[in-house]
Amino acid sequence: MEKREQIYEGKAKKVFLTDDPDLVIVDYKDDATAFNGLKKGTITGKGVINNKMSNLLMQKLEKAGIPTHFVEELSDRETLVKKVSIVPLEVIIRNIAAGSFSKNYGVKEGTPFEQPTIEFSYKNDDLGDPLINDYHALALKLATKDEIELIKKYAFAVNDYMKAYWKERGVILVDFKLEFGKTSDGTIVLADEISPDTCRFWDAKTMEKLDKDRFRRDMGGVEDAYNEIMGRLS
Ligand code: TMP
Image 1 (cartoon, helix red, strand yellow):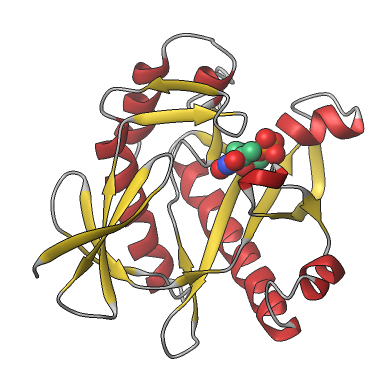
Image 2 (cartoon, helix red, strand yellow):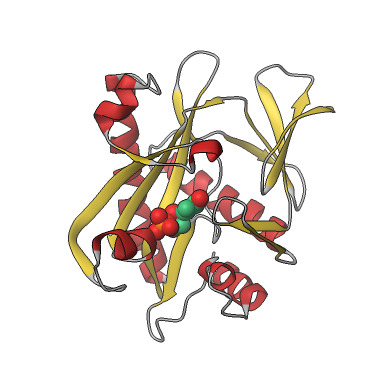
């Protein structure tokens, strides 16, 4: 597979064309941002961890019946994926109150929910990724009604799978963000990444944070946390 010109550079990844119009190569960086790019830094080794964790989880999810963009891991930081147009929705599932949920609704961090919640943000950096509902997504023509229903079904299925998977490894899956894409034939697939950048992971025994919150909140031990959570994978 030949790596051709770069078509995109985001906060944490670059995307390159290949000689196949339906496939692109994602290249994970160590760059970290938070608060819509206001806070910037580097988490050494993060690109390798996020690449490998994302690929491992997506392969497992694919086997569990959730279609993903994953094709083949090419190197420590590079992966061949299906070329998609990203549905501009950040799909957030929460099992326990934390982060913006705790802040927006005045709920103490760590409060468990009786059932998982789902929310959408409009993926638009200029607007600061505002929280929206299904009707807003339809009005903004971000996806069709059927696509939104399918995305919700997949997102809850990812949660069911991942909650159990991480529990076996002594980790509480607090919440996470997913992005979906549409392939050239219109199929909706799970895209982007699943990593400590996009999930909140708490150690089940110590309740220690093993994710990007350590960077967002200047808690220190960021690299150690990424290595620790990666070490729990198998
Ligand atoms: P939040 O509590 O800040 O809304 O974050 C919810 C989850 O989404 C958390 O696991 C971190 C993840 N997330 C992203 O992946 N990207 C983002 O830009 C934000 C704000 C959160």
